[in-house]
Amino acid sequence: MNIFRRELKANLKSLIIWCVIMALLILGGVAKFSAYFNNPELLKILDSLPAAYVDALSLRAFNLTTISGFYGIMFIYFALLGAIAAAMWGSDAISKEERNKTVEFSLVLPVTRSKVITAKVLAALVNCIVFMLVTALISIGVAQNYKPDQAFYNFLTVEMEGMFVIELVFLAIGLLLGCVMKQYKRSSSIAIAIILVAYFLSILSGLQKNLDFLKYFTPFKYFDASELFRSGALSGAYLLLSAAIIVVCVVAAYLTYNRRDLYI
Amino acid sequence: MSATIYLYELRSRLKSVITWSIALVAIILIFFSIFPGFADQAALLNETMSKFPPALLAAFGLNQVDLSSVLGFFSFIFLFTQLCIAIQAGNYGFGLVSIEETDLTADFLVSKPVSRAQILNSKLLAAITSLVITDVVVWVSSIAAFMLFNADRPYDTHTLILLLLSLLVFQLFFLSLGLVISLLVKRVRSVTPYALGLGFGMYVLSAFSGLEGVSVLETITAFKHFDPNYIIQHVAYNTPLVLLDVAVIIVSLAVSYWLYLRRDIPAVS
Image 1 (cartoon, helix red, strand yellow):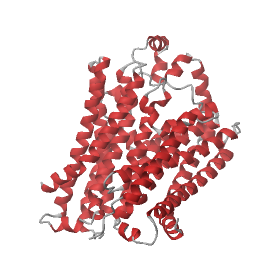
Image 2 (cartoon, one colour; image 1 turned 135 degrees about the vertical axis):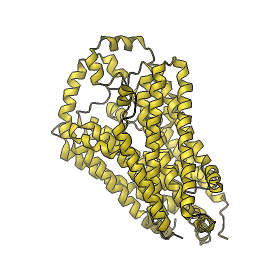
Image 3 (tube, chains in turn blue, red; image 1 turned 90 degrees about the horizontal axis):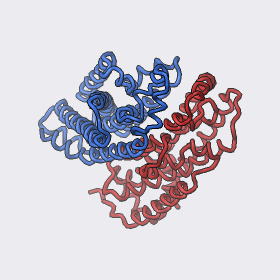
Image 4 (tube, one colour; image 1 turned 45 degrees about the horizontal axis):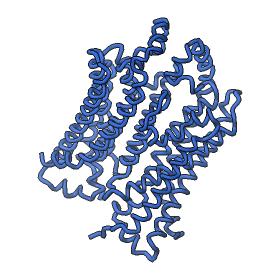
């Protein structure tokens, strides 16, 4: 419990910074969006288009004349920021003890190594939840100016669920990196590499049909905004895949950290 | 300027420079290699889109980038190159002097018979050299990619050179901003979260630059200042914004020197 509380306090500054970046993103986006909202010219054009066209270009999910369409576009950025923040919290939780030369101290405390990790993971988890809730609250607050309907709230809820799952996946990956890497400096470099590769793969997989298989390798593609909009729920298969990644990473993290040599 | 510090810094950064360079070459070549197949698709898409009302295309920012042209496709890749470069430069900037304090070597360094200005000079020069080496790799691989995968479509060399050269100011922006922030805060414990926050933060803020209209928040992000679409459309830089960048760089560097010369450097107890 003490470790948990200490971790929360230590992470607070980073949490606030990430929330500020998120707020800037939403406010910056909404400033642009206000020009599109219920823009009569655009509405007329959209109405005149055949329904098949609109579906083919997923203009419905990304229809910028509605607030839901705006948040459809925002989703990938929510996911991206959530992933980076979570990966950093996960890997930093373990590696910072070695960097700050406090690892010997925290491991001579009368708690097992597993308990240390559990407390740290729970603290990072709280951060992820708060980050997601802050994003949701800012979104709802900003949306009030645009008369959101029930469909918007449903869409936002499912988006936030998606963001949270992506956060969890990257938190688990970050945690594993922090536990496995013998040198603390390496865990954050590899975390950057994984985030960038996942992001680039998600873009690459959308470019061409025969690169579509890449989507299994990047969590950013597990939950696609237009798919979320259509089905209104997270896809079960990808939820299972995410759960598998999380379980494997967390179990491996505990196993390795319990028997590893510390870098002093 | 002290040659010893310069060489030491350069050597300690060598591995990172090699890793980033390889990653950037891979991004440029892999993305570009799908261009020949993609160009035909994109040309088809363009044909379909030309039937759309121009206002609609403008509204969704679809009229700016022609992905079937070599430069249009490259602008798309270039944005990712910029993202990587921003993180790398931010990393070097944030770590430039703060790393000595986390590694508890700062008091050792300042006790050497060199002035603090000399220390900062040598460190900055070494970081800039590392960034320029990365640039050269990006330049060479971009030009090679253009020659290999242009699918016999024409492109303007002048625009390409403008795009590639813009990386220099872009890097200095993140390097100097990282440096000044690292000196303004009391202590940088870990460099990576800062660099990722700065790089990705600015990247997502420019996410809506394809849409019409101006948002004040956009003018603070360097990704907007060096928007590849703008450079390709106008065959010139967005001069006022680039000058703003130059001003930010000069101010950050001046403040960094001022702060570092007066910084209270903790001794190892």
